Amino acid sequence: MLRKALSELSGKGFPSAPEDVLPEILFSRWKKEFSAAQLKELTEAFSSTPEFTFRIEKKCPELTFNYSRAFCIDPAFPFGTALPGDVLGSKEFSDGMIYIQDPAASLAVSMAPAKKMERILDLCAAPGGKSLMLLEKYPEVQKFV
Image (tube, rainbow, N blue to C red; front, side):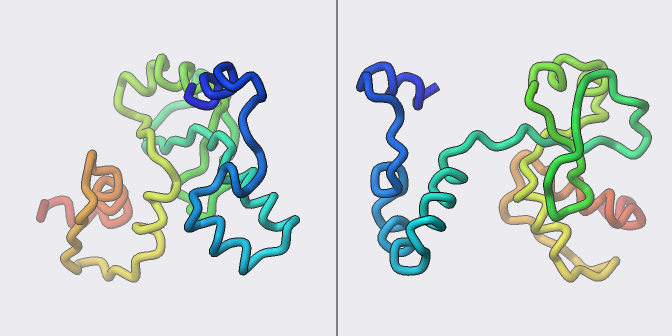
């Protein structure tokens, strides 16, 4: 929405040059580390709209809307869609079978070298998606929560 407003106000469209898009400190660091082609590619990724991703409960029935496998390192995050309204308006979402979460948050859980009965403190727990993923990963600890 802000990109569209900026485009309409300026009449020139949204800027695409790395020095116009990236925060100054990031641009100065990346300019030293990457080639011009790599910097352009990183800038495009930085400016792109991320895929709307979600997780589903294991007991979730067949989904009633269009979705695809999301590109993600974490196998707990297999789904994405270009139509978030379909997900948010679905019966599966209203029944609590779908959890909307960015894949980056799941990396903390999937990469943590936790043992099954360790104590884990989630210091960035709002609204609790990583904590839910930990409970899914280690269901035997639910009695301790």
